[in-house]
Structure formats: C-alpha cells, structure tokens
Image (cartoon, rainbow, N blue to C red; front, side, top):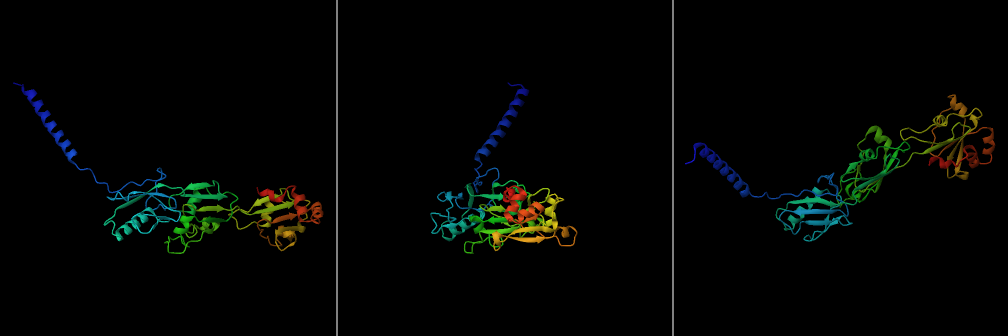
Length: 348
C-alpha cells in the first residue's frame, strides 16, 4: 500500500495530465482559419504601396487573387495599351491609371455582371513595376530618378531633390507620362478612359508656388512624369568694371537691375565713361542679331534716371577710352576685348 504523500502526488499528476490532454485535443480539433485575403506583394517591400494609392502603369505585373476561384487567381501583365486581358471576359479591362482597389472593384463588377462569379472577393497586388519612377533634372541640388509608387506633389519631389539650386529659374516644366496623361485632367482630377486626355506637359510658376503655397500650383505628380527645372537667365557685365563676367538672375528676385548688376561686378573703374554705357540685347530684327540701348549710368547713380531692369542674356557694357575705340569696330570685338574670353562660356 502506497504512503499518503505518494498518493497525493500521483493524484496531482493525473489531474495535470488530464488538463493538458484536454487542451491538446481542443487545439487539434480547432479548424484552420479560412483565408479571406492575400497580403499584397510589391516591387519595393521596404515601402509597399497602399491599394488605394498605387497607380497601375503599363507593363506592371499584377497578382490577382479571386477567393475560391483558382482558375482566375494568377499574375497578369498590363499591356502597353494600359489594358489587362482576363481570359473569361469578352473585352480587356482598362487598368493603367487606376488604383489597385479601383481595378479590384472593376474586375469584381465585370465578373458579377457576366454571371461568372456570384459574389467575387478579389485582392490585387503588385509583383513587378518598371515604370514607377519620376525623373527630376536641371537646377536642383540632387537631380536623379526617384521611385514613386503613388501620386505625389511637385513640392514633395522638390523636397526629395533637396530643393532648388542657386541658379534655378522661376519655372518648372512637367512632362506627363502615360499614367499622368490617363489619370490627370486639366486640373489634376482623375479622368476615365472616355474623357479627353490631359495635356502632356505644363509649366508651373515656382516663384508663386514657393511664396504663396497655392495648392493649385502644387500639382499632382504621377509615376512616369519628368520634371525639368530650367536654369535662370544670365546677365553679363563687361568693360571698365572690377569683376567682368556673367551673373545669374536669381529665381527669388523680381529681375536684375543695372545697379544690381554693377554691384555684382564690384563697381566701375575710375576710368569708366559711365555716361556712354550701353545695353547690348538680343534682337533678331537688329543688325548682327543684337540691338544697342544707350544708357547714362552716371545719371542712374545720381538718382536722376530710373534704374532699368535687365533681361536674360543682356550685356551691360561700360566703356573706358580703350574699350570705346574697340566698340567702334563692332559689338563682338567689344565683348572679346573687354572680357578676354568668349562671353557665352561664362555660364558653364
């Protein structure tokens, strides 16, 4: 006969074994959860696009999962026309320019409308994407190609490019890609395939955008778009000045005046004939393609004459006695003699 202490321990072990056995049976009897959705696969796992934001583009490879319909659940390539061919449907479906959610709803509607699936549950994800980038070039601090999986804005792209360069102009030129043309109307609103296509390029006033933050100017940027920031114009100051050369018209300014250009050239020399100053301006109708605008710099400095605003590519020529003789031999001779270099090389 077992002692009482051993009987007590044995009873405890029997109770624990029974509890563990019941738990194990309950876990084994518990049915496996039925899958209701598939996690989207994306070309950029570190930053997966949301189904409501990602815009489908031509040549994308989409994974379509139709619950309980394995015959339709597979990868589909978006054609160059922006359409996807589903074998059981009579006509291809337009996909480019739609979000993943919108295409899922469109496919669900078509399957149900044609009586193929009574209550379709569809998940669409991205397997591959080659065209979801935006290129920004020109006068920005970091021009390059950036991956963009959703619609974004011009200011967002400028921020990724680390802002404008010092010689940036006042405009941004946006060349629309296929997605942008399909997805953006005249005011950046989504359009259907039946509506007219959006313009393939537009110009934005950067000065107004940066100063006023006008939301109408902060346009949507779509994958496949290209942004170019032209460099600002250059004004040249030559002749009897202390620092002749080309000077950039800053994008934040309202234009460069004669006195501002003179200050950048570190003032005129003591031998300068200020009253004989000339602005040389491009003019296709003038001899040699340039016209001469006489200017009395001495009167401007005294405040007797207004300080005119220069145009891009203007040459402000302040002669002295030697340069005046060269001026009589022609404008090009003046430019060459005053600077010692080809004036148009100063911008590079």
